Length: 336
Image (cartoon, rainbow, N blue to C red; front, side, top):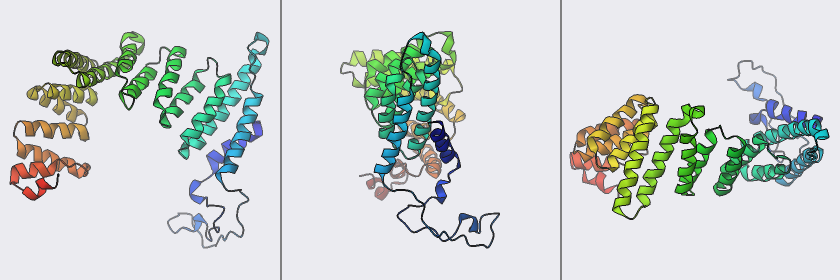
């Protein structure tokens, strides 16, 4: 087991992916060292006379992976009696190294589905082991299994309640494709209510809480409820900006919330603060152009868009502004 793990470490650290070729193809006739751009190049031709003895196909790779993990799982000590404590710790450390190497190897290839399946098998000896649970949650996130990832992150929060990054990550998942806004609010409040242990993360917690309230206001059907949630969002963003005045995201979302509430002058002030902190932020530039156009300052908005297009050419707001400023009907019709 140790020799196999050391071989995997050597391959992951020492194998150059640029020099690898498909075993089914003909080998290259020239070494990378013969590249004229290579500083230490010489004129000798390194013709490779034979193909590497590597069996091709995902089935063989999967077979080797299963053999490797089967060995790691078999050597793991599962007994919880006190006499086996030291053996259990050693076997768990060895298995964790194997799964870490597997994470590196499969992560490079984007095989997150396979990685999550492998880490799921490791759960049988991951009792109260935060590292494996967190790796499992991250692999589920990467594989697009957000609902299961949130459930695993709840276990990670139980194992490590003082780590504010875990509920923030869970809140991000809930606000995304899952649209579990009540769950997102609960995770954000975990960060806010923990206390001084996560004081550096409190601003992020209030930022997540404000986003949750803003999204809930968008979904609300009653006008009164929308106004209540928008006020809560505004207060949360103001608190986040107070705790972290150098965070451009706090200033941006505060400006965005003022813009949603139709308070354009206040929104302009905060979006300019965000751009002072992060001058090339695309969202802040976009919001500034929209706010200027809302005040009918079309020339200023067009200048902002011209500047933004040099960095982000995929922006499509320019044709409408060109029409409003220059009466360029052809550019305006391009939008439709």
